[in-house]
Image (spheres, rainbow, N blue to C red):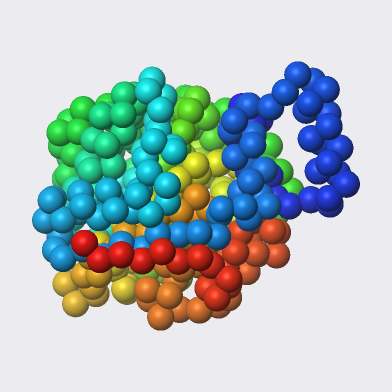
Length: 314
């Protein structure tokens, strides 16, 4: 499971020594190559931004299909018999119009495409409210059933202690075993305001597979967010900006706080996706401390001008 962890950028000589050691030990796995590519920014600074005509299921499906085409096609990522985990935000006992959880139609569209590729798809999150109520009311339970995917209620006994490479706030984290056992992880956050971190996006969405006391991580939420992204590898990020919550997040607000953007952002690097997503709120990425820390650690590009942004309207 060490290969699934995200390694921050290290001294070049140390990295070369690690590569040589891996070769001598008998070769690399493909996930390890993907980890090195992400750490070096190869491909990770390319994102796809797709805007649809409506929030209908058909329109959202077209958005997902277009997004995959822009970044090389779903075949680039999903293979037959892969164990694929989709990690949405299913934290709150709320309906989709509130923009508290990931849009269930988006989750369904992504899950269905993976199932059609022959993957075994599981969807889960560590809910804040009652998981069974939250999965149902959010619409994600039905979305999983419609797509032929399985849902899993996060079991507090199924965590594994994982070292945080270059940990900032903590040295290790209890990570839900279900995500460690996956062949491929699709991180599917909703973009919304957060009272502590200002925004909650792809990096913070990983808190949903971390055990322990949430309050402890909020002691330094920005460093904790970086530690989450160092420890849990997102192979692909599909950020939900179909509706965004612009204030009183993560689970409050009124209809006036919900803005319909009909947009998704796809990329392989959660730091870069988060940096772009900040601009949807008219926030400069460098004004978010967790992004500044991640950039300092060499985890991804946060300068919009240095990103390759592929845009489409469908």
